[in-house]
Amino acid sequence: MPVRWILAILAALLMLPTLAGAQSSNFEERPDLGRFFDAAGITGTFAMHDVQGNTLTLVHPARALRRDVPASTFKIANSLIALETGAVADVDEVLPYGGKPQPFPQWERDMSMREAIRASNVPVYQEVARRIGLERMRGMLERLGYGNADPGDVVDRFWLDGPLEISAVEQARFVAALATNALPLTDRSQTQVREILLMEEIDGAKLYGKTGWAFYEDKTDLGWFVGWVERDGRIFAFALNMDMTEIEQAGLRIALAKRFLGELGAL
Image (cartoon, rainbow, N blue to C red; front, side):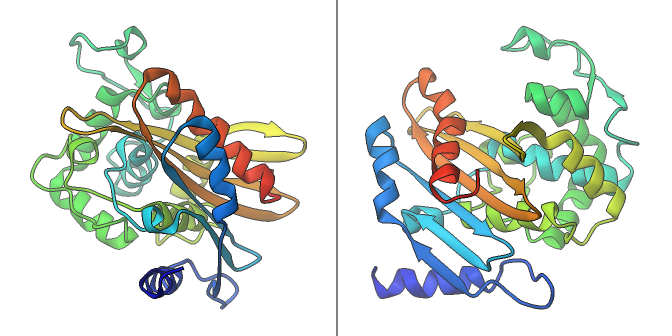
């Protein structure tokens, strides 16, 4: 591995959440696992933080350190900030979608954050962001250390179009802190958001997560899957991002992440 990437990864490790007084101090590059991306004809990266094992594992580390827009994975942070600021009472408060035609019929109704995060309902979460407001949003992003923490000047588009950006390593760091209740937020906010992120249980393991899809006109679309596995008292936080050139590739975000998690003993 080039020295510059070793130094960059070491710097990223210093940013990982502290648990029981010990920071993560080990990293492992797994170029062999790139075969899963190759077999699918996909270019991407995967980062996994074994919290109790104090290890960060990276597939294609250069890309893992590159920042991109979070797209709908920002619904995790948006939910936390909404609860913490009181912009939304709880994850079951019904929120308006705005009444305008949407690209997906399932978005064309009011719903709670509990339901909206599963449907990845953009207009509902845009309403959430407007309730929070730009200045409170900026302050909370800085408190959370979320990527470049820059919401720009448009409160309801910055996670879709930029300027907000975050890397796969930073995403894994962020959800590791959420999974372990280590974010600088109330227990209530973190507990409620963890609850709505639970996707499924697999052989005694719980998989939590959120997908994202950044649409571009001038370059290749970007797919995300961010979350963590809770198994036998251990937390494995992860982030996958990948280029998407066809709509059919959307399902590969979760499928590939499960392959990596299985190979690394997390799932």
